Length: 269
Ligand SMILES: O=C(O)c1cc(=O)[nH]c(=O)n1[C@@H]1O[C@H](COP(=O)(O)O)[C@@H](O)[C@H]1O
Image 1 (cartoon, helix red, strand yellow):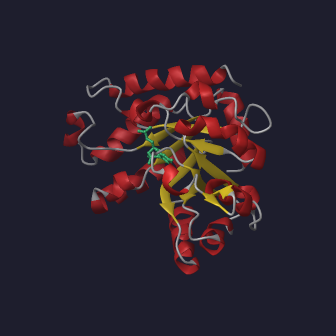
Image 2 (cartoon, protein in one colour):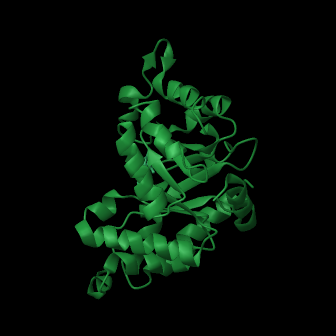
Image 3 (cartoon, rainbow, N blue to C red):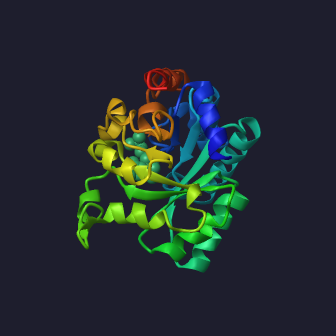
């Protein structure tokens, strides 16, 4: 999906909500465990109830790998369902990959060709040749970790290197890479006070912003940092939407939380 297409969808739905499909079998309604594929049954119910309110879905690979081959099969069914039923939705494989060039090439093939995601999250710390195999896919997006939502972000990302914070170096250097127009960046909602500086370096790239809700980030504080004004953010909520209820009404309750987030976002568009 192109960035222009994503922008069009954001304007049409008046939403820049990304729902994180982080499925935890201990948190889903227990009646779903009787289904043949509980993970897919849960995802399908969430997608069916929220697809008109969200522009993106982000399964985090950890939550599928944790259930072995069954988890990976459920991931495959989920992305196929999204691509077939809702091709207008932007899909993110939250895998945080990155390795030596030929290995990254295989990761890119897995997420962009086999699973056919629109984008994948990538860690930048192995440098240019670890990211470029993802950027080779001109119709896909690479979402680079810039300033993450967790406390440990202060261990390295905000430390100075040659007088400049490491996360700023990541932004500046990555801008010079081949097909850099296909880069998006992760900035945690818990790091809203850094967004003004970040936007000075990358005024025209989408930001994926996780960390609202369960991690304490404020939606309102990040919403004004779109690109060139108002569009250019994907704000993610996973647990806050998925586990609004553990009862049979879970999908309905998830839709209520998603609607509340969407309505707050509409005020900024
Ligand atoms: O890349 C991410 O999506 C990510 C980066 C980051 O800095 N912080 C962060 O929380 N995430 C992911 O975003 C999701 C946040 O989930 P909730 O805190 O439940 O909304 C999880 O899948 C995290 O792995």
